[in-house]
Image (cartoon, rainbow, N blue to C red; front, top):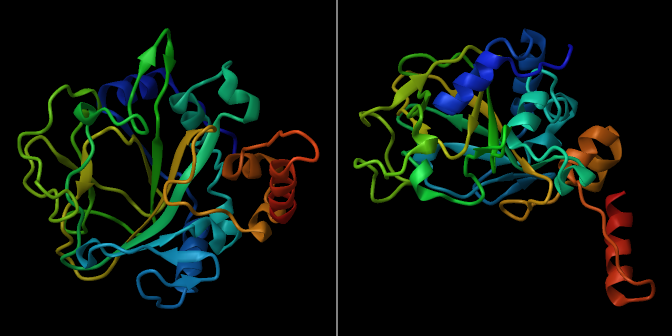
Length: 287
């Protein structure tokens, strides 16, 4: 597949709304491979590991999150620099011509699979008014500069009653917090929030959005399971959100382009120093 570059209309709609829907981003075969990869992960409890995949600890009503999902096999590795979105992500994260690009423009600070069943959801969070440095939205001097661009990939059809992702279009630029913001962001759902819309996706569609947009999810009402995968991209000087590191085996089998996105850093220190030896040992282990 040829790499997709942003069209003028995509730039306009992303700037206006804070998100884009990339229809048919993945083939049916690729979606089936990803679902099979998730099925191969045995049931694990919160804070347990399966190899290098970790089940995150959070409220039961948010479902299951399998962190470091790019460790689950080659179909997940393909998502790292997928041609349908990688050029769009580079454009919207920005930094071209700056120091960031000396080490590659991008870094994935978090990647996970999310599985939700009936009654599960996540409440409203984020928004331009919070002005969180890691996630903020900027456009200046003809360039996008976004702290974090998320790619959310549907592995099942997500329609009415399926617990769709919800966003408030344009809220990435808001100067005011939403008056209906919950006191505890990690509880509840985004149902009934004024100004919010559900984003319906077919399996294989992807939702690209700046993390500064106010977002969450509706509570799932239908039987069955909502499955998505999320890869979160930021500038190459970032760090892992939850302290994870890619396994040496993963780094060894990645292409140079993918490895640069997964682990973009190089290190310099005086020869013979303790730091030099420690860094050298770490890099040898990751090589």
